[in-house]
Amino acid sequence: MRRTSAWLAALSLALAALCLAPAESRAAESLGRGPTPSDELGHGASLYVPDANPAAYRQAFELARAGQLLDAARIVAMVNTPQAVWYGDQTPAQVERLIREVTRDADRQDAIPAFALYNIPGRDCSNYSGGGASNTAEYKAWIDAVARGIGDRDALVTLEPDALALLPADCGQDDAQGTRTAARYTEVNYAVSELEPLPGTRVYLDTGHSGWHTVNSIVPRLIKGGIARASGFYTNASNYQSDDANSWYGKLISSCLAYVGAGGDVAACPHQWWPRADAQAWLDSHVHVPASRMKHFVTDSSRNGRGPWTPPAGKYTDPQDWCNPPDRGLGARPTLRTGDPLQDARLWIKTPGESDGLCLRGTPGPQDPERAMIDPAAGDWFPEQALELVRFANPPMLG
Image 1 (cartoon, helix red, strand yellow):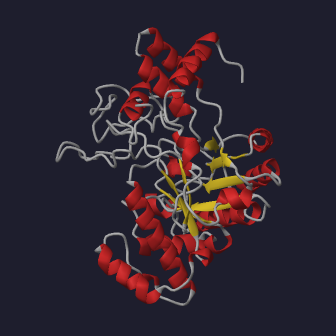
Image 2: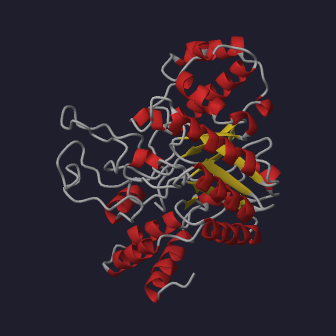
Image 3: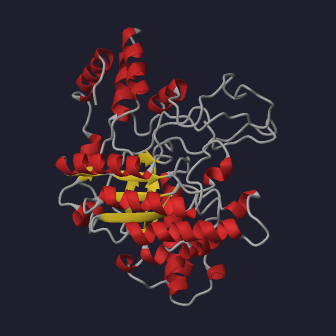
């Protein structure tokens, strides 16, 4: 990608700062024990760093020009950290070409790209991130193109954020016969059947996050979505739950899937709001499947450094705590070696620094009342939020 001299100046500044900082993301790859995606998908591989949003480099340059050198370096360090590459709305020909370019580039670097595929019909219940394919046939053709683009190269696929946690039936977009929800399951199953068999690909299905669906609610959706044929599931995409909450939620879901697979009743599974000691005692008594035979998971730590935002009590009729909450920070850096036998990776699935959309929090708008400004459209660069993320990062971004 050709960058302007301004971007190169910002990049040079960031590299100078990085030389003085611990190589945390590189060191993180050496942690943990046991087989990991890096062992099975490519010997010694690391996670792929995609091209950044050009607006990030423009922001870094403006910060450097204003003398805010550390913040400039932090912004560039953030976008030069491995994170998912998002695709949705492209034509089949476009997505095939783009994914082939990324997988080839990653292969040359001995890196594994993480893809967030986001093109399901009725995406986001037609809200801020609405769009996607027009129908099931169009979606299948798009997935076929994704499969051709990946080919035999390595890839981690987080399939369709919110596709299972936010079904058409959940948002009043279905008919009395449940036609659109049935189609949603058909579409997710098709994607699993086409992508998971690729020699270097692992597919993970959507669970929302631990502050949303209970284990007993999301497990039946995973089963209907084809989890038996996928590598596993992911949690916390674009959300703010802590690493501890994400890991516990993942363990409970993996365990419940194993229990149900052996003939157990999903209603009996402990969920994330059980006392942990009680839930662990239940798992010890009822689940005896080794981790190697259970469904694994990945988590999103892109914006969870400070955990979820707690809106002011009684201030908003709809606080939208998921939508550009203030004063959040980057979380732990991505890695393929988590030290958890059930967790294949910690990723930055959400692109940190890009807006969630126009957040009105139950007010008539047009401003976000929590920020006293009009938030950028979903997917656009949000300079104010990007600065918050790097300044409040946990662990710190460059110090």
